Image 1 (tube, rainbow, N blue to C red):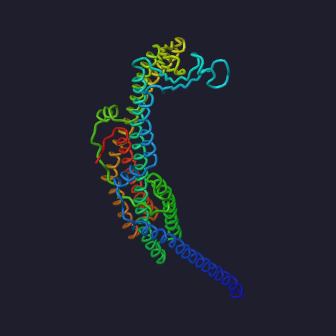
Image 2: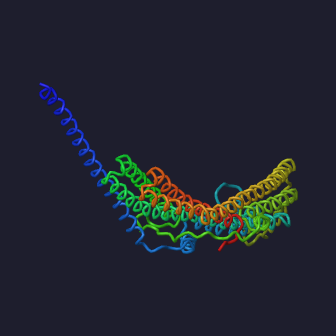
Image 3: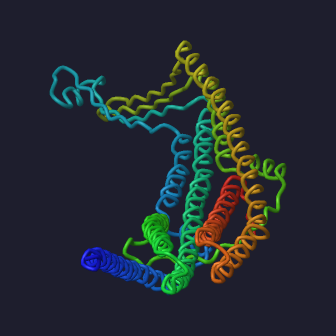
Length: 448
């Protein structure tokens, strides 16, 4: 009787163990399937990266020369200056000469009526010329030349802006391409860790959660690689626009970044900004133009002149007429006073704009100098401290985990530290180079 009662309980426990084994088998099948599915996109991403890296790298100097040669924005500025150089000759020339043909009839409205029988009928030919007061023409030409000087300086300003945008995009692209290599290298390292976790799980030293965490980290790296590919494509489009290349042209492979040295002091850079910054020089040229406009407005109080000459031919039996004339154009003084006040106000405005431009550029130089200095210190900390320390910590955690002396969470945390610090180092390196490029644009110096 007791045996009969015990049999249903044994059967229930056996059935429960069977269901548990079946569930565990299903979980392991899903885990293996998920690993296979995740491994395939990662392999595709690595294949894409290998095909991209097969493009030979191009130096930043070559791209800068190409942009200066082909940029339509620079060409627009150059053509604007070329057009402005012709204005001075136009405004400093004499006014157009006016030619006159006259015919006077006597006794009838018919043409040439009375020409043969009256000494009042005639055919006349003459010319007249306006003559501005001495000095006005030269001042008008001077104003036009000052405007051309502004256009000429703006060519350099546009060139530096294009170069700065090109450098910033190049350094960002180099950061992404370097980071992509870091992600792929760590992706492979993480796969090695997965194999260790799986082997420990098979012998009963690990658990399923460790396998799933390793797979989750692989998926995160795959997501980062996908995001990097998207941003790389956007930067490629920007670079090709700046270089005036077709968008379907081959992609650009950058050279590995190396930190350049900040070889100038802050005071030297600030002084060079006042001397060489094209925006400051453009405002100085604009101030010189307004000075000439004030001198011209003062000269406009002087009168202008005009001369005329007329020859009138009558019939041969009558004497011809000869007429010469001289006239003076008196300026409207109230209008000239308003023009002078406008010119002086424009000069004061240009003076304040120059002051504001200098202050703005000096502030930008100081800001970028601080960024470059701090970034150089950060790079030293990464290179000499954080990166080797994180790698040593990871190697120690990996050895301890393999010897079953440390948990998987500590190993995964040290792996994340290595990955994040390597990515942060590449980002800091790119920001350091962008800061130096901005200083080059503002000051005109070149860092090697």
